[in-house]
Image 1 (cartoon, one colour):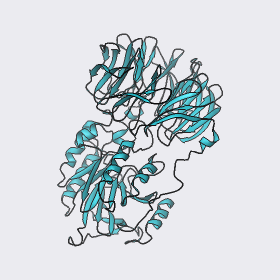
Image 2 (cartoon, rainbow, N blue to C red):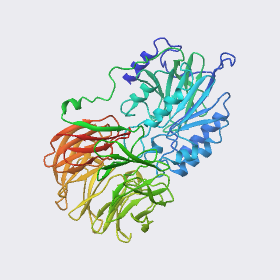
Image 3 (cartoon, one colour):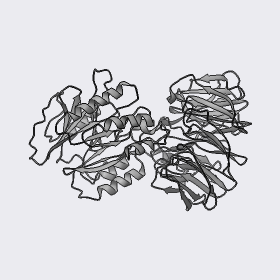
Image 4 (cartoon, one colour):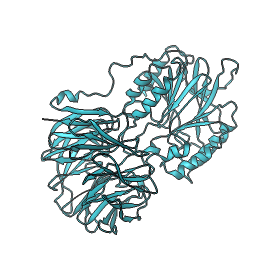
Length: 630
C-alpha cells in the first residue's frame, strides 16, 4: 500500500483530478464535439469454467455493456478461463461474441501455464493473443505476459517485444499509446519488465492497463503509470463488475462499474503531462552482482536468438540442438555456438528433443512428431498426431518414447519413424521427459497420475497418484528418477515421494523440505536432490527404506523459486537453475556452493552439463549458451 501511495503522489504532481479521494459517483457528461472523447470497457480475470458462477458474471457484464450508451469497444486483459482448456475458451468466446461492439483480447497466466494446446488454442479461437489498433487518435496494444507452460514469473517474449517496437515505430511517436497486459509490469510479477519499459519509453505511453490482482491498484512501472483492474468475478459480493475508461484530450479516467450500479471513479491520469523520462532508471533490475563474487565463471559463448525458449539443449558429437517458441529446431556448434542449420516446424517446440544414432527427434505444437538427420537437418520422417505434442523425448536402443496432448503415449522406431506401440489410457496431456528404467517407462500426466508402462509393448503396469483430485497438483512437470527399486518424484503439493518401482505403491512421502517440481539423482544412484521453494537445495538418501532421510541442505540464496528445472549431477557436481536467470553448482557430497552465475533475469530451463567445468543452458528470454568454470 505504501508503494502505491508513493506512486500516486508522484504521478499526481499536476493532475486534473487529485488522489483517490474515496469512491464516489461519476456521471459521464461530456460533449462529443470536444476533440472526440470516448469510452471503453475493460474486462479482466473472467476465469470462465462451464457450470461455474463465472459464466453468469460474464453474461451479466456483456448485457450491461450492451445497454450502456457510448461504449466504443471492449478490452479483455487475460485470465479469460480458469484452466485454459478449449471448451472453456470457446464458452468465453460465445459469450463475448454477444457484445454489440468490437472487443480486443489477450491471454493471462491461466491460459498459458496449464495448456494442453501449448498455448495455441487461444489464438485458434480468438485469432491472436495480441492486438493493435488506433481509435480516435489513441493507439492501443495488447500482448501476452506468460508464463508459458513452465511455472515461473510472468514474461514478455522477445518476439513480442520486437513486434511491439516495430508496430510503435510505424506512426508518429507523439500519438498517445495505451498498453494492455495481464500481469503488472513490475519486479515479482514479470521477470523482464525492464526490457519492455526500455523498449517503449521513447514513445508517448500514457498507461499500461491490466489485471491479475483482482482489485483496483495504481502502480508505476519505471515511471509509466500502471492501472490494475478489478476482476469480473463477484467473489464475496452479490454481483460482479468491470471497468469503464473515459478518454478525453487531457484525461484518462478509470471507473469501477458493478452490475446494476453506477460507475465510481477511482483514479484519473493526465493525457498530456509527462510522468517519466526517456532515459529511465539508472539502477535497473536485475542485480547481477553475484557474478562479481564468482568472477572465475565466464560465459564462453552466448547466442541471443530473439525467440523464447522453453526446452533444454541436447548434444550429439559436436552439435547442440535447441527447439524454440516459433517452432524452430536449430543446430549449433558446441565449441563456439555458431549456427549450423535450422528446421522450421509450424508451431511452438516446448518439449526437450532427444538425439541418438544421427537422428534428432522432437514434438511440435503443430501436431507432429519429427525425426531429422542430425548432421544436416533434413526431414527423415514425420508422424501426425491428433493434438499438439508438448512432451520431452527419451531415446533408448533406437526407440523414442514421448507423450502428447491427444492422451496418447507413443514408442517410435527412430530410424524408420514406425509407430511400435501406443498407450491411450491417459486422460490429460504430457509435458514431462519419460524415465526409462529396466523394462519400464515412467511418466507423469496432467490427470493426477504417474504411469508405468511396459516399454516393450505399452501395457499398463501401474499408476500412482498423490491422492489429490485437482489436476494442478499432478506429478506432471517433474522428470522422474529411479534407483534401488524406487521411483522418486516431487509434485506441486510440495512433497517428495519414493514409490516402489514394481508395484507403484508409496514407500515414503515427506513435506519436510517444501520442494516443488524439480528433482535430480546422483550418478551412483545413492542420493536424491531437490529444490525447495525458498533458497535451498536438499539432498536425501535413495538407499534408506520405509522413511525419508535428509543428508544435507544447502542455502543457495536464490529466493522464492518454483521453476520446474531439474537438478543434474556430473562428476561430483550438482548443477541447477532458477526462474530468475541463476545457474549454480554444488558439491554433490556436502552441498557446498561452488559457484553461481546470473545470465539474465528469466527462466533457465534444465541445464545440460558437459563435464564438471562446462554447462549448456537455454533461457525463456531467448539465449543459448555455455558457462565455463575453472
